[in-house]
Image (tube, rainbow, N blue to C red):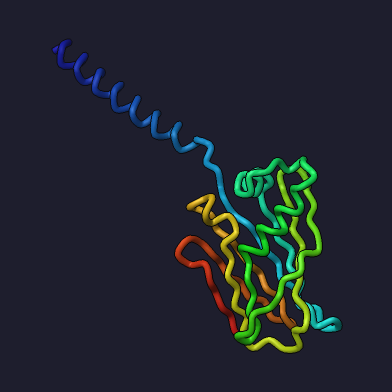
Length: 164
């Protein structure tokens, strides 16, 4: 009888140990990969202004340059130009990089495209950080003449289009 009780207690301790392991694993640090872009239409200048927020270490890893070096902003500019395309009403638009700033763990990137008088459709190709991080998610929020639209991008869904 005591032997059966010891066997049951051993099984209970074993199961408790496994459950404790899984509970502790659920608190493990998991890196989250995302970027956020806000697009604002400026009616007076017929311009789309883009503000992109990225994790400093993630963009640094992707472009393989330390964010504290002088060439960081130039590499970010090149990277954004190669990984973000805009089409207004089916026509490709040229992106003009207007600057960036590092604020701790965040890099803010600013760019724009002009000559946008009216938008019926806005198509964006956004591959920022997708090749470096397979689980990367890029969100784009668009504000155009009182209308708000959201897009999301990930591997396998690099292009998205909205209508106004």
